[in-house]
Amino acid sequence: MRFVDEFRDAQLGRVVAGEILAALEPGRHYKVMEVCGGHTHSIYKYGIDDLLPANVELVHGPGCPVCVIPMGRVDDGIAVARNEGVIFTCFGDMLRVPGSEYTLLEAKAQGADVRMVYSPLDALRIARENPDREVVFFAIGFETTAPSTALTLKRAKAEGMTNFTCICNHVTIVPPLRALLESPDLRLDGFIGPGHVCTVVGARPFEFIPSDYGRPVVISGFEPLDILQSILMILRQLAEGRAEVENQYKRVVPHEGNLRALEVMSEVFELRPHFEWRGLGFISQSALRLSAAYRDFDAEERFAVPGVRVADPKACQCGEVLKGVIKPWECKVFGTACTPEHAIGTCMVSPEGACAAYYNYGRYARTKEVV
Ligand code: SF4
Image (cartoon, rainbow, N blue to C red; front, side):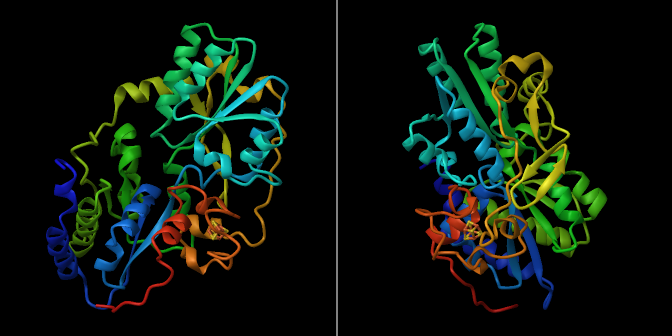
């Protein structure tokens, strides 16, 4: 298939793997974080990890939008969904994320009108079709999906909709990366930059990583050769003593990002002073809420929400997985009490979660040669 097969050529993959070996400093251990959950899945789906020597360690970052939603926000959603006359809409993977007592799917089984949608525009259509009901959209995602929520809210405002609101859980990628770089738990050598987010924000927001922390960043596509090439570009920067933001995904990511999308986002959203991330705690200015001009569409203003902070279950180590401190299989409940069918933590629920990637592609442990 054109524009796909070229990026999955196994022979070329082996050539790049050879170049990666040649770029290594013997005996040095490299830790490279792939920020985005989409990369994590490609890495394990295509066996990229198997092409790397053991001293090139891939560490999984916090870039899975479902994984970072804390239990308290799920509880807030369920509280709103249980209001008389509410139709509560969300993406499918959000349905099985555990709250403190229930998931949204269980709330639906108990009588709440919870519906899965593929886009915020589906939620808006449901609102148009049900003028006597309140329709709420549970918005999640990084800068990748925030523009679609923003455009939907603009359309709702233009149409004068009064029965459509949104619980905004959109998060931004730079603050958690800065928090990780400040963390003494983790020593990272470089970053595989989140290609999807960068289609919207561009490369510029990541310049603080080389300038403030001296680490290279390579913005990467999601096909196997994209990722291998990005790892090679990071290793070459390290070998040459450089630290820069490079863009491997130029076919999709413009350096300046998508200016129209950024403009719409800045009209509809503003930064929250702080937001709780699952396992990472509160991070300042790391999430979006609706701007004053769109306050009428804010479900948190229209409905009572508990807004309570709920501690993760004791057995859950999603926080350590999201920070890259442990591998998924090092969590005590991985694959036993916690599976995709009966998840304890979010990283096993989301198709972008690191635990789901390891579980689905059978990566339970790793013993390889160090070069
Ligand atoms: S195995 Fe389950 S509980 Fe453990 S880190 Fe993964 S998702 Fe969280």
